[in-house]
Length: 371
Image (tube, helix red, strand yellow):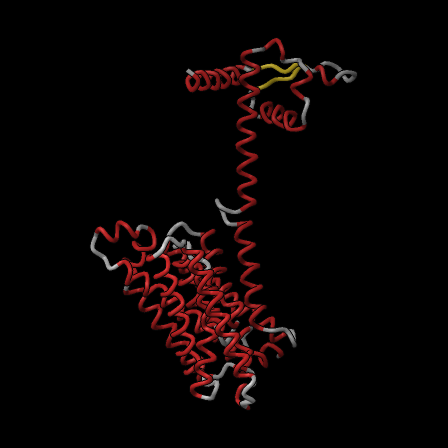
């Protein structure tokens, strides 16, 4: 019954739908930013949105979502285009250009926010909530605006799919084909600004960068293809949004935006650890498998070249050697002659017929590589 009450709650519905839209747009667009090595782009644009929010309030005198979106989109896009201009017209690297735009625009935003707070305008209350988000204040009318932006952005990605894919992976080759690379890059950057605008109400200026990077970083671990990566990133974004919103609602007093980001972070850490072929755990397993194969070959080589040393205690000097010897015995490559209970370390190991043939292959391969 508690879950039914929760699902029918108006505020909870708005927050969950808004968080889902945020994940749906930020995940795919974050993939392009991450693959173009512009992970800081979302951070720069989100911080640059603050002066747009303040200017919108100064001009309109209200916190109406339409004006906030337009203002933040203008200043966010301006910061991104300024970054592109700085990197193309100077020797600055992308990260330096992003850092410059982030700090300057955010500083301007803080100055404007301080100015607004000194005007004693009654409508300014809650304006600073855009720094960290205020998901509970999301209205159904806000969702229609967020949905329209999300739909328009995803449609644009579909229309520019081939061009965006080529520019992302090989911009120089795209130029040789006559593609307007600068225009496509500007469009991709503007779409990231749109994603930031959608997330301002939910997670705020400070944390929005995480929603650009985190789903893409998680998806990168699970897919080697751009299409699959975008789908997984969208799924991660939606799951993070819904999970964070649900936890926030069930745990009274906890902010929604940070919980959404923390949920996305947990998914990223899980992906980094468990993703097949790329995860940390799989990397450790692969390392020890390779180490085991190498040690196996070393022992077979030693038995083949120096059969008289097969009784040497040094063969069992380490736990890894003992494990490898037992594995070779199970595989039928080694045989062990019992030397009595009093001196187990002097037990004699020797190659079986199958082990001799396997060792012969190892020696031949080694001599071929060193010749």
